[in-house]
Image (cartoon, rainbow, N blue to C red; front, side, top):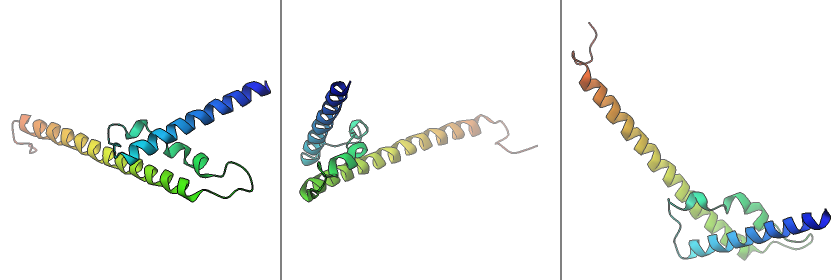
Amino acid sequence: MTQQRCADACAAAAQVADMYKNCIKLAAENKISQKNTWSLRLIDHMSDLVKPAEEGRTTNFQHASCTLDAGIKIYAYRVDSVHSEAFKVLGGLSRTAGAAEEDEPDGGEGQ
């Protein structure tokens, strides 16, 4: 059982490392967008990536700054995505409300 846990932990660490490399590459190439920002999981693993690998070692601040920079870009595009989706919903609601007002025969006033 212990070997299985070690293998799972190593596989998870390899996946996080691949995800980190991909996110840093996309951030460096300025290819993070509203369309792909929700599939990037760098923010979820930020604390795992920034903490030192071994006790007693100091934090690599260059590594931390690159991680933070990519995380900021991802978070900013997520905020933009939510903002634009909210305005799409608002536009749909206002069109629906406008159509409902036009359908009323007495102009929407009470009797």
